[in-house]
Image (tube, rainbow, N blue to C red; front, side, top):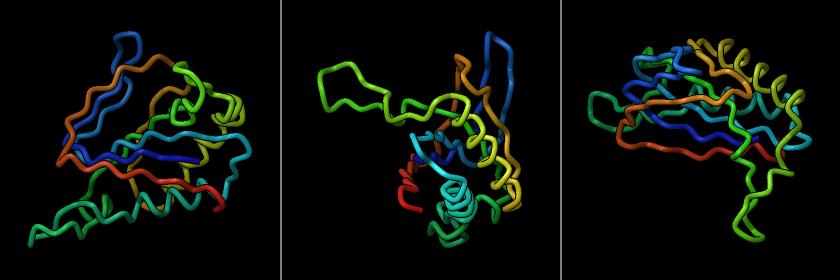
Length: 148
């Protein structure tokens, strides 16, 4: 399971021109589920993301989590995080989990984040989503739960 975590001032997500989710500030998290990923990996990432200290404290040091600053998380499923470009120029997605299992783990991860005390908004699994985000920093963290 992989995640791209971005600190944002604002993010909105639409499908077919309809606003689905929006957060005023916090984290936009793109979550990819790989073949064979487990619930334990979702639990690991949820705890890490909720407690990741990438917001500035009064001294300007990245020392606060999304929970500490009262931010929200927009969680977006993104199978393309498992795109393999090692051969040719067209990515292979054979390492991405099949949609039924991936969606279940995506929903499980969202619930585990909520259990960490974070307000979580979500995208629409499998939809063609349009995302507008105002990156803060920019701060982008790559997380991988392989082996967890």
